[in-house]
Image (cartoon, rainbow, N blue to C red; front, side, top):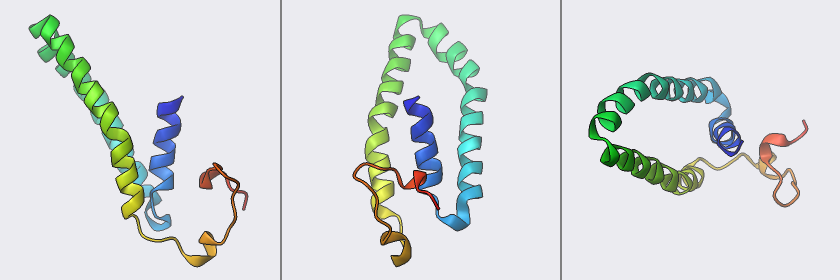
Length: 102
């Protein structure tokens, strides 16, 4: 559930209003590419290398998981400032801007 909610938050929350479709398209391509490459990587690297292959795969996932929060923080820091009208809307502490009623 965390991965799914994080994917939606990054895909929709960081995308500018005019580029929602482009961001979702790239997100979908990345997901599809991962599903297409997984059999090749698992068969070629993991199964042919045996135990070291599994350790490499685990390290790969560990590095990707550890890189996620800093990359998301960087993306949020470097995105353009929100317009004044949107910035003036008050939210409760911890409430997601994606869940605002319009």
